[in-house]
Length: 381
Image 1: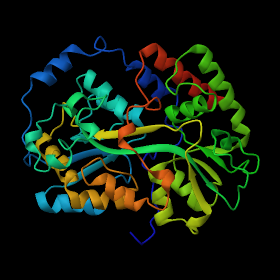
Image 2 (image 1 turned 120 degrees about the vertical axis):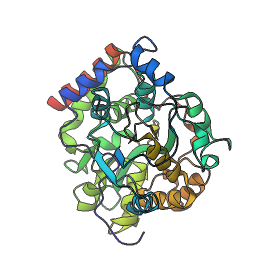
Image 3 (image 1 turned 90 degrees about the vertical axis):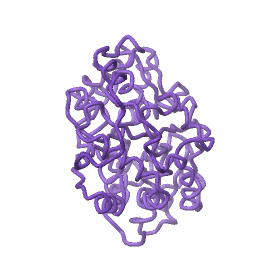
Image 4 (image 1 turned 180 degrees about the vertical axis):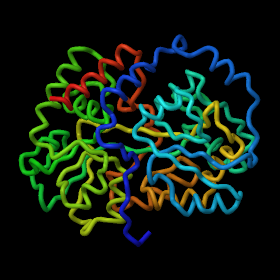
């Protein structure tokens, strides 16, 4: 991809949308094992016949903004004679609240822990893998995602991408980087530092800085995390998930960033790519993934299955990796991504490490509410 584009990042949150309302929605649907699963929904989901891959209407698509190559979408529409009716997330919590409220979509792209929540709550359909002509590209070749922690046997989801969360910085502006989460408190870059406007990522970053578990809900730990995040605020220009455009504009000298967004920025918008560094802090860095699902109430599950299969097709995998800057979790995806990111070893994503202490996990409702409260209080301070 040679022509620059003004690209939203993979999680183009609406400014301020992840506030008290969204946090409350997430707390209300916290993870508490099987006991929190609505039995009626779960039973209906498991008893319903699995969909067949055939056109049964347009594709109602609900995902992050700008998270699929337009050419891949155009090819699907042309091949199957359907339209794609697209709506974009304002965050995972808001997405889940809409699904729980009964909003109908054919395909949705939640993060791993949200797949687990949706599966436990009976909100997504079990998939018949025999319906995928390209199933061999995704399953059965030894990938961890044949049986991921969030969805045993990938019965309800098809894995899509992985990423790390680290720090991007301009070495022409910042000469005192330490390769640490402390770099988000850098005096040289004061007023030009951005932190991702996302609760797991901010809390996880502060936890790692303090030597704590990214998933901690211990009250003493959360108090320390809140204090350290509040201490950071004088250094910040803003909380923002729009890392690509903040770096492209010159406003960001240091940005808490997702690995794929950094590669996207380097390839499409950086004026001088040699001046930028992506670091994985020495205290550890989060590694996470997402996956496609078909909601239980999808109006057109047949078309949805065709879409999932379309994304597994090797030529479409190549297009999406080039467009997004993220590794896709098919047979060909990791090697294609390794070539695309070869100039930046810190962008490497090792799928064998998908089960690790820095993967964000689910909590029971009380613990999730406590974590949400930290983020709400930090932003209000």
